[in-house]
Image (cartoon, rainbow over all chains, first blue to last red; front, side):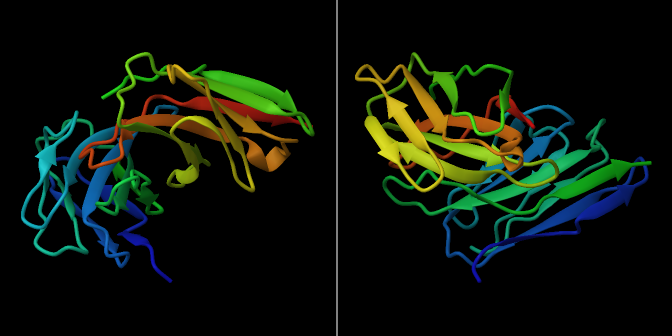
Length: 114
Length: 111
């Protein structure tokens, strides 16, 4: 079945450590996104990528980094510069086609800083 | 991108029809309106999308007036399992590179 796989589902990090969240899709979608969600809040855009080897900052990119070396993969690194990284992280993708601004989401990764 | 405004929360009894309205006064000509549903600790999932007038699928209807400055998601005969957060998005269907979610509407279905 086609879909988006995020891993790990749960992750614990000590302060000062970098961690990388994985996002893989087999939907042949061109565009991929990373969102952050805090308890009781909506989704905020961190980074997005429309094509391989290209990505743009969203609303809250500070303290995060991404890469897009392959069409199906869009990993997110939460760096030590992110002062409050505890949150639920969601990866999404969509086809780059007319009338197709429908996002498909992964199941999410919950990061907790100890 | 058009900014959207939704009620923060709504309550409804089981079996009733629920209508959630989204305001998007600055909607552009090429923008579509898309609604998503999110359960706790899960990613949002697509419910319905429309451009104008009325769209209906197996789970919901979407009503869009002629001026397109608002839209209404209609959920018929809600059940407890419809308790979730509902998001309205407005974006360019031809290739918007970034899609912004607001805070959504938290619907609570009461037995």
